[in-house]
Image (cartoon, rainbow, N blue to C red; front, side):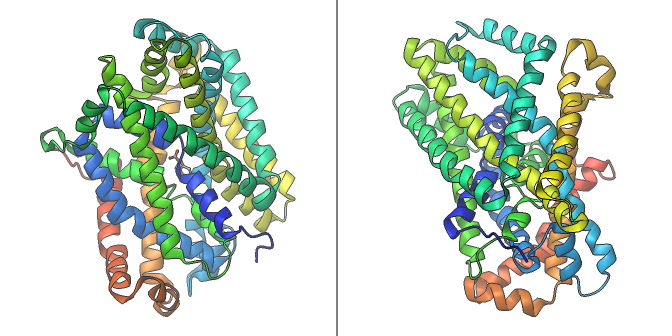
Length: 449
Ligand code: PFF
């Protein structure tokens, strides 16, 4: 039983804070750019609506009923085979893996907050600055990774209420306010109509199997599904919270912020004739160069943009750490301080390896096959572990937990029609769709069109 619980608003902010992150503002625009725009956005939206919401409700339910860390929750709720099901709870450690590269990227953002005052005057300069920073400037990257690590652990060590809820209470409104401001400004740019067309012109010729798999993986990543972050938060949810309604709010906030960020970014990009397919460097290369066109106002734009990006990153980062911290506290009776240092230490050290993988001196030794260590972690977690976590949760809630328990809680909130559709989706659509994704990543089947 958790003692400190979120307030209702606190939970919505914290869960939305987990969902809204680098995935929305950094990753979503660049993968949309790479996979050709509208058709990709379409698949992403469909996945969110049909798979994302379904799993989000299931994940919240496990946390709400289990009232514990993820391993204990699975163990408690499984009517039999408890010893087997508890292993599903180890999805809590996927968060630590994500956090390794996530913290490094937040570090880059911190660096760019300072660089907002001296923007590169064109894309070539911006590109070479970014590449030099990544491939040679180990000291600065390490310093910022360390600062990010210290911030994250200093929040998580204070616990759910005084740490995580409070952080989100301040940062979420500020970051939303900044993004809406930038979005409103972008409405005045000529590039805005091109941006609208790019994101919502559903040209299916551009769609291929790879794009679909990336969209599904990203839908998980962006709503923070499949690694027990939302589950762990839900263990501290106020009783009688409406899970269904809350899940819709979280998804709505997350999707709106991704769309707003994407539309604004592409409006700036198209205004100055830049390419949308710049990859991970999109916000670090194209954007600073474009902002420099606006003179001093551009510096302010860059500063506020990177601050909002950093805030989005931090509110997600704490949710990536909390599941394993909670696990160490509950299962090993560690103090919160010890548990936080232990979990934090793991991601901090592996994060350094991820950081070095992008550098000139160490990159060669940290490249395995087609990807370096940094990209492998991103790929394995997003494309494989998160969907796998989704399958486990769908099967667990759809087939294993007593149906009466699920039904008596959710049916009054959803109405019986929606409840039945949800259950159908959870039992059949989600496991089948996600199995395709996972089997394809493992090379067992090959989706290719
Ligand atoms: N949802 C976050 C983002 O979009 O950046 C990332 C994330 C946070 C993924 C927490 C998974 C998670 F459990």
